[in-house]
Length: 306
Image (cartoon, rainbow, N blue to C red):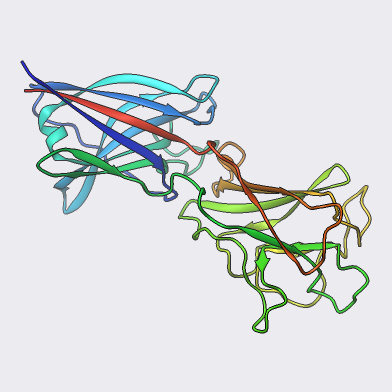
């Protein structure tokens, strides 16, 4: 008996989708699928991870359907490894593996409303005469160039320029600043949020989904609108802080997180960070560092007996 081993790579995919479940009729010719994951978050007992697959041209009631492969939880270190059996017919027909978070009660609940379908990892399969490979969607922020600039564009004063920072580049260019973040729009079900630590207090500058356009919070800024994510710290200082301030030496971070209010505190991944120099020059762009090896990823090894 021969065995064909196929490796697939699965990476972070920032979209959300509900899934219909079907059970295969043919229970013969079972083959093995070995999964291995890392950088997954611990879930409460009422939630679980689910591996699904999609099938080529399989429809029920004129609707494409997905099949459950297995349910699993993760270890304390965020890893998970397990083996599941799949029908040979299903393996031939697969086009994608993906992982979601589901409510273990099997339905929507008041405690965890609408968590069903948030895709954490996805790997698309492409068959040819030689092998099957996986297509990476968003596995890393490596290779992106990301900048911030310290200045205060939302007021007309010039004596508080170190009291704001924005994700822009090229402030002094003739045509004005351009977006400082080099990655794409956060997918459905996810958003970005930026933070800065001011004198030991972490302050959110707001959520945003794109490098272009204002973020969702301007609680501390002045009256002049500015069309990029960031914040001027001029007004409404939180307890224990005084605005305007001097951001020299402050720490900046950007996270990718789920938009679902139940999952947003669980599914949060730091992606960028920087420390503003003590001798920062206002109006000058500085680079943010990519946080490596924090996004979920994994592999699937299919062993087909032929």
